[in-house]
Length: 290
Image (cartoon, rainbow, N blue to C red; front, side, top):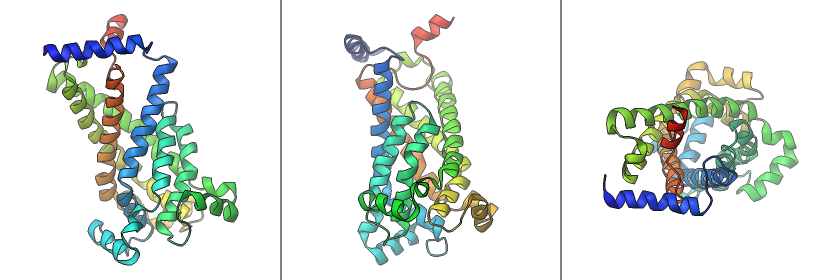
């Protein structure tokens, strides 16, 4: 083990102890929530152009039929600024979701849903609103409070399976990497090795979760753009095959790197505050359970 790395980890542990940071303490959960907000909000903000294209491909697949031609159509018809429509909904909405995910995805989606409602409309209806500031009152004036939650059930249908499969895949992948590939305990690995395992597991878990959540994602976009009045109508109008495949390539291209960067930022924040990276039990808890 590298002496400098050992000293660095020991220093982080001393700093965490000095700050009173304990695993599973209120301060620990507050840090997780803050890290989740920053990681989710910043990464979703960065991929707003791809998200704009993804939503338009779902709502108008004949016009936006591929990634490159779709981007070209958006820029040519509506200008480069059109690629950043809905950035506020991405940043603040997924920031709220990332913070709430420290408790439960069901609660997180209740917080996300109003932002998603405005974001999808702004991205696909250029004359609807410019962003959150004028979008929120517009939705409320035309549809009332229910307008913000039209897509809550399919949002749960998208994010709950995605989260369960993503977290499960992440944990199993991290364990596999440490046991079979790196062949060291996590605490004995360098910071670079730990973050490398985090990033690889994050990408794999994001790609797997995307495939499962794709049908519900198409339904969410259809409902918020009034292409369908309810979930059953949306399923019939989109078609079973299209539910599975429409926008799937761009979602995989979009979600994989986003989940990777979320885990990277999240674990970097934990490392900087003296906490262990995500995945598996810390050695002291493993020993306590023996």
